[in-house]
Image (cartoon, rainbow, N blue to C red; front, side):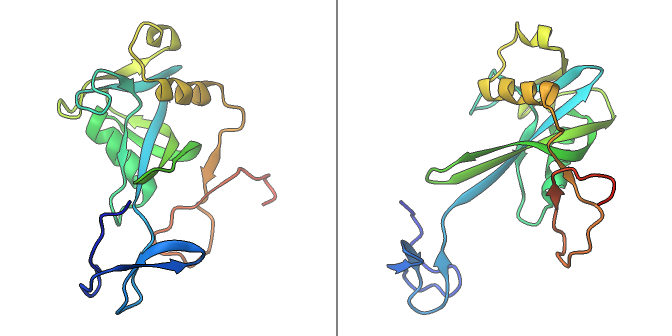
Length: 192
C-alpha cells in the first residue's frame, strides 16, 4: 500500500480511482498519477585472469556476505555509468560496462529491478571502501567455495563464467533521438 497522500505537482490531497483497469492514486486537481514505487539496482560481473571481483558487505542487508559490487542508480545517471561508479567506489577498480548478463525482477511494495552487467577490467587493484564493504578481491570458483558468498551472487557468477552468448551488448551505433539513453541489444551478425 502506498504512503503517498499529496500530489507532488500541486499539493492537492490524492484520491484513489480506476485508471487503465487498476486502482491508482491520482490527483483530482491536475494530471498527476502515482504509478508506483520503484528502485533499480545494478551489479557488476568483472572477470580478470579467470577470477571474479567480489566484495564483502560491511552493512545490512547482507552484512558479512561476499557479493558482486553494485548499488542503485541515481535519478539522472545513465545506468552503465552507475555500475562503473559503484565498482570504483566499492572496490577501487576502474571498469567499463560492456553488456548485460542477467536481470532480476522483484515485484513488491517497492518494485525492484536489478540489472547485472558484464564488465571489462580497465585498471586498479581491489581495495574496499571500508564503509559499504570491508574486503574486496578477485576470486576463483575454488576460493569462493570456502567463502560466505550470497546465493544470488553464486547464480550470477555461474552466468558470468559459464554463460553461452555473452548477454545483451551495449549499442553504440544507433541514431535514435533519445538523449542520454543507454541502449543494449542481443548481439547481431556482422551485416547489421
